[in-house]
Length: 209
Image (cartoon, rainbow, N blue to C red; front, top):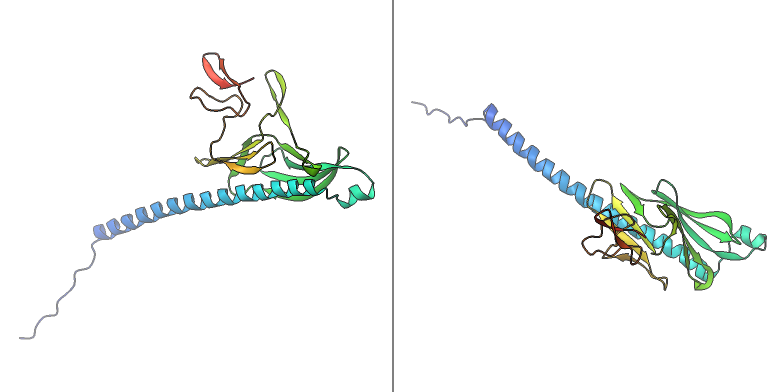
């Protein structure tokens, strides 16, 4: 008698659905992890770009390099301003000659979902290493000059955050221990960005003046 051929059983519908679901779960987990890694890389690159542009403004101020318009008008160069626009996503570097804005020499923007949450919108590097001028903000007590040279950055809907610091000596670096911005909780002993400003307010401890 002829031998019958063996028949390999195929997948049932339930087995197919289970395999599809498992692959879907694995793909979803991989996609989430990829997005986290990519978001972290974009954030790191964004911070590096801001660092480089801050140093560019500082270097031009230290060298006393005048833009063409400033030289042609015979005006004195005061310094170079690193200025964040109102949307806190875009910034520009511009020369300041005798308090007159001579236009941007460079434009920049924050990548991905990064945005600036705190810190001065205007940082002016004075010529020949003569210091740094900062902006301020309105508080309950009126206009407050920034006493800290820090720029705070976060990524929307994530736990990614960092601070760029500018020291009194002009060193620009990423801070490994971010300070607490104005009007935020400092009950855990955290250091306020405004020095010695952790106060009791309505039963809470906040960074206030």
